[in-house]
Image 1 (spheres, rainbow, N blue to C red):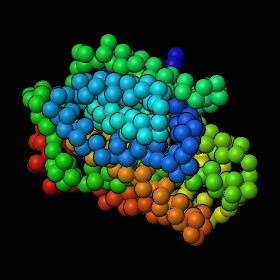
Image 2 (cartoon, rainbow, N blue to C red; image 1 turned 180 degrees about the vertical axis):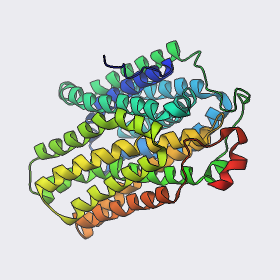
Image 3 (cartoon, one colour; image 1 turned 60 degrees about the horizontal axis):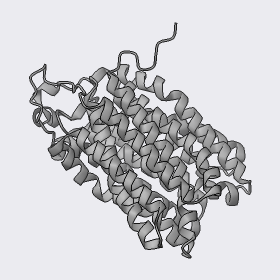
Length: 407
């Protein structure tokens, strides 16, 4: 008899996974329509791309502020507020009458997105104990991945009917996510980390966390994930396939599907591995595999190598999407909004800067140089992981001030 994937996990993990799925479906629906809608206002391709960049940039610059709000107000209040901001701004974006309005509203949506992400991850890591963080993070990532796969399938045809319609659908899915959160997270049980004696208002500061080698490795690993997974894969791989390999866009879809399917199939097994074996070996494995895959793309221009590299990258991404987050949960004692925010900022920074650097290298040198630079960024995370200490059984009762020096 098969065990239910949520078996043994707090109810809140399933709720947060459902919220993540609803948010990701909506984002997947609206993503194909954003540049097309922007172009309807008579702007160029760069300006159309700026609408997407505005969302990512505002996520980046508002993350620490979101973390401070979590420390002050609590995860659930910030989560609901963040989803509300993205929902309202998305509905208004669908009604935008000018490019400037669309740009500003997407930027405001980025602020709400940062609030949602930081608070949701913070809450997820606090409702489970240390031996469940890998599985819980795997379920959370599964919700996002499934939503990200399903959303574009609906968004493309919907945008053909009306380029404004996806924004309203996105707002609706966000409203659903907010309703789920409001209904089922009001009485979330937060795990006590100090043998039941921890004060609810205990906060872990960013300087405390930075003294832990595992947290530093998690930051650098997440930087590489953002750079490669959310940045270079989305921006450069399509051009590499169509221009570098001379293949049709169908092969772009093949590579993306192989990567996403591999990652999705491994999220739950990797979650169990992270909980039973440790965070450090999982980070090392993920960074090594992701680095190797980018090295393959840099060294050989071949369709077969491309598909194999995307599969290997999917395996590495499964490890890197779980182990660093579980490490952050080990480090945080009580509320750690700024600690989680800095972790999220590392990924966002990579997602913003990675495509720019890789694109410049591809334009001025070659696709190989772009993928090689990405491999170097991932290699830095690998080095940090190798140099770090395991955090899975880190003694929280002494607090970060005492144990961090051992990191």
